[in-house]
Image (cartoon, rainbow over all chains, first blue to last red; front, side, top):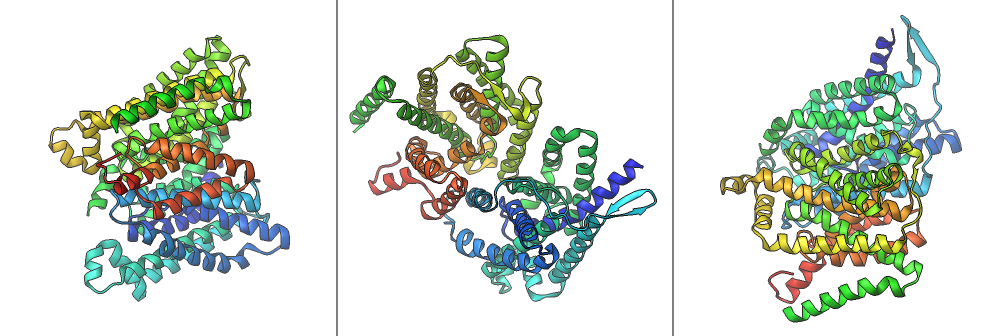
Length: 288
Length: 304
């Protein structure tokens, strides 16, 4: 029975991880930038929700539109004001964008630490659970899962049906081709960075009532998103969902069977294993 | 010009050697921190600056070095410098197989892989019995700051000498060739794997040796101080500020940033990481090539 319970926990967590990974994926797809500040945006949103709940009793779901809007603005600004201005003549622009988001990650987590402090906290919200066939389904987890799936579906719909969505997909596939067809690539990138960050902060809002978080755990979520995207294949959104489920299950099982200390290392181990097993696929995609 | 440089170097080294005899406790501490930061920046510069592999996990070797030293000093009662040497050897012993595996990854995949690896090393090292896990480990008092300072100074000078050698040697040319284009370097007959792993191991040896001194300096280590993300970030900022892949970049960036860091740490301990992160972002945009290349471009010298 415990196995079934762990599976349910893993899948429910996987839904939110998938949402977070979608945001990471779109930024990588459109700009070939690994956003090391991704997890910090996520944790910042979660911490902000905890703050609003404990100080004013505001429900995280009410805050959701606000964090999404804020995430979009902040992400668009990061691209427009910072990444766009990186000199392109420096030896490796990939390395400088990576280093830039590395600095941004410390900027956000350090700022969050100064603002909110470093306590572990979560929103005590919907603490009840449904009992189905001997498996307990916590209401908060179920809610987070449902909202995450709904947001992911909206995201997919946006990419498929709107002009901006088409421009984003075109830019991910072939930058020069998109430019040739009249896509304003710079604008698409600013939009995509905004969208990716908005999705990260939405995932963080849901995380706020799922797990106990500390402001400095952004790295963990960046690694999680990276791992999910690597498992599923870059630019492959269906694959990302599968990857998120695998990671969610891995987290749920390792934390039960291996204990707290080793479970902390488990996501990193999985991440490195995945990187080492699929590097050829990754490189093939990158040179395409 | 060349003669003047040699004279300055000799005078500077002489001053650094006699400094502890004259300075008070605070200034020796500051001097130690400066020398440590410069040495860490030189370590990172080899793998990131010369070989072009941005490792965000070199602090793993620093942490490993400090824990190996601490365990040997506490359990086997060796003289600490031998223990610190063992820490450096342990870092190399880990770096060779790790490099063989991790250096297959490129670009952001390598950077993130090393980041994850550093977290894993941290968790695994602190899971060793006797390290006190998260609670930390006390070292027996005895060695003063002066010993630690000389140890660190020797490593810093050694890593500068190593970098000068790399910059002029065929090995350095091989590294720079693979940094610019790994496939082309391979077809030109560069043993790419060997060159990468050598650079990675040298880049691990330096923090590995420094870690032991740091453990003695603190006399108490716990995971957050041994695997300090602050020191990791600092080494990167200093190298980028001074000039990535240059001989004097880490020295200029390291000396300058340590003083800035000292002021920031004293005044804004809460916002320290935020300011440093923001500084890195600003630097990449305002001074992407770093101080040293900017100066040599202005004065028309070929390179610094």
